[in-house]
Image (cartoon, rainbow, N blue to C red):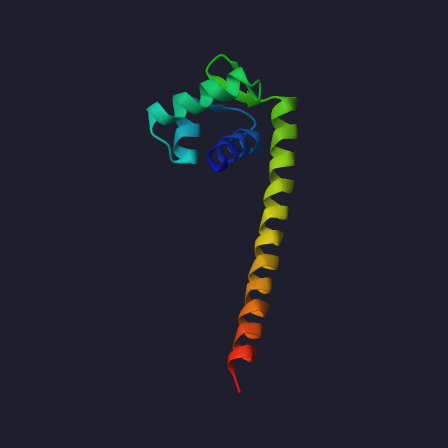
Length: 97
């Protein structure tokens, strides 16, 4: 999912990119990029006009939802780490006399 986010973000920020520029910005091989672009075109998250790829409205919504998901995930990970520390403290308290 992160690769898809990188591709969509690159296209959005630049207002349309060629396959070569997307490949460099997303750090992908040509073969991998082609696979992702095909998937994104089929899902209608990107559209192609000439040699450039553009983000569709659906792609913008996908990117927005992904960012919200990622932010919530990071918050949950922080909360989990905090709970694990609390659990460890409780275990230490049980083992001390």
